[in-house]
Image 1 (cartoon, rainbow, N blue to C red):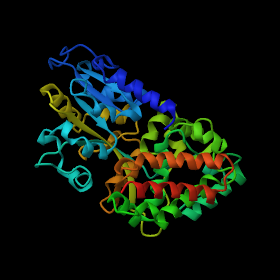
Image 2: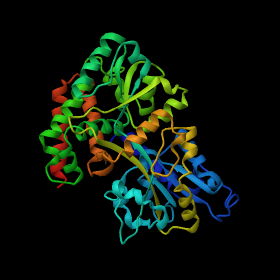
Image 3: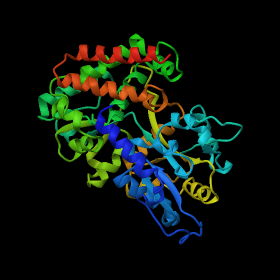
Image 4: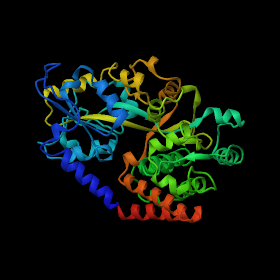
Length: 423
């Protein structure tokens, strides 16, 4: 890991999880609005627009909560000693629940919805009949966003297969003068989502084997082929806005804006919460189109999802339990859905009328009974963080002029070696 990232993590742990934890960004006024009697500390991965949206979700409890935005270092919240640990944590990775169960308190029984069982129980099993994490926010992560007007003006159609997508990219380069893709390579998780979609929607048996922890999965041919497909697309001439060099330093919001604000790219693969970026910059909904990541025949119903889970740290106070109960009501996320966008409620009873048309379509696709939703590898498997690093190295190799096939072989070898070492 680069020294800068290590330094950032060190600072966050020291500043956010030390004795002054309760002074981190958020709210004071202990008990003033609701009579809780004490401040409830909530650690989240969100920042900026999404953090402000979550404050509105807190509603009447907002003045009784202290929010600590930890970004990619959210796991640090559960690693703190008990006196510095927050009361509630919004976790983006199911694997963190399993790894920290002894630090979590069982949830109030009434917050677990029976409709959660099919999707969430395999990832969030009950222990002793009690759940320790409740789904809060879903994100459809098999989405490609595109500039609708550009497609209409140049007679472009959305792709139905991987070959269609490669052909579409060539037509965009030839006809439009902009790059087909924007890519936020500075955020390794965004690269991982791209790879996960290629693997799940073309080689699903291998994807399932990796999730199950089967030995040798990372060394298989399907993984090598998936890296090859990714490298072929990213490494094509003119494919990435600004080239691989620019993609390496661009963050996820910048990639979205390259498509919808700066108009230097036609498409960006990003989860459903990308809508919060387009809305914050006033992009009209009718200028935005989406399509689902192309798949091999018969695998169109297998979708990558991500989710934010709420957990109570042990020992949970009565005040923290009351705030959690509020967050788990169907109406709680409506301000985020209505005012900010990019939020798909995990609770099936949340009113869908406030969704934009684009997000409603994505939410309905996730809710379709015939579809099989799978969490991203980077959120579920032990080598998830390494996968992000390997994909950044693949992009770095392309930027240095390495031929796509060779860059893919290097990436596949790195993952295979790590898989063997992890046995």
